Length: 316
Ligand code: PEP
Ligand code: MG
Image (cartoon, rainbow, N blue to C red; front, side):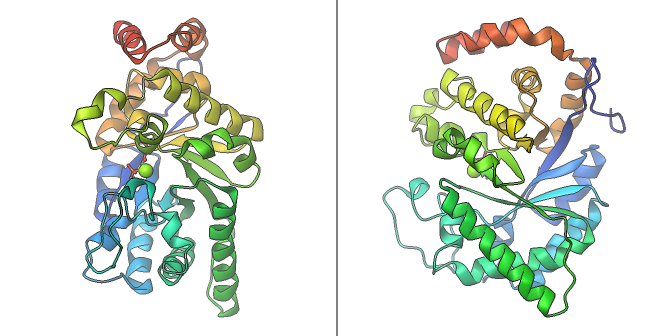
């Protein structure tokens, strides 16, 4: 399966990508035959550092990943700090609800985070000439948040070009869809962004109002919940209507029970831990999408997480 194409039995191509946390992970991505990096979680660069990583340090990391992928797409997520991810050198006030608070893109586009964000964007823009870079912003709820972040991208690109620094002219800029507000407004976002990547880890958390790390309420934390499935189907369908690429980089993308549904809905890119890529490719190549219509209709008519789970388990 390593060098096989990710094509279904009825001839449709999908992209199988891998999630990484550091440049070292690229080796595993290639060893497992992934076609792209679908999520580079750059916050590890910040978390593994004693102080804010400099523009040059970041440039080296991004360049290493782009070069390691040899021209294959690399989706880099701008830093997703906050929630459960703290930085010892960044003084963040204690919050009652950190997952709902000052985190991720909300920091990046604030006065507090502006300099940090511009440093990251400049490093990414400089690295862009070493491969096929895509940038995505985490935790977007509002169009104006995306526009603010995109404006920083445009400004820093213009600054670098003025300084005579080369920047690729084909960098796609997209968003993670992991907040229900963005899922519901997917049609409006799709007019402005280059791509979506569905972050089911957080989309489940926020759709179900359930802390993703709390065992006591884990019965609520499931992608099989009909509300979550409808949200995913809606996001994919709006992306298709607008003609933009839609991927998924949350854990659900590697779930063999969900992959057939996602294929049926037309998810373009599946990004997962590298160790799942080959198994997933086998599943995709064995699947005939046209034969899934009845299954999809039956699943989407079910009323509860347990019924969906039981149905999909029996099928697998
Ligand atoms: C997600 O929320 O699905 C995701 C991929 O991001 P993270 O798990 O880093 O929040
Ligand atoms: Mg997330």
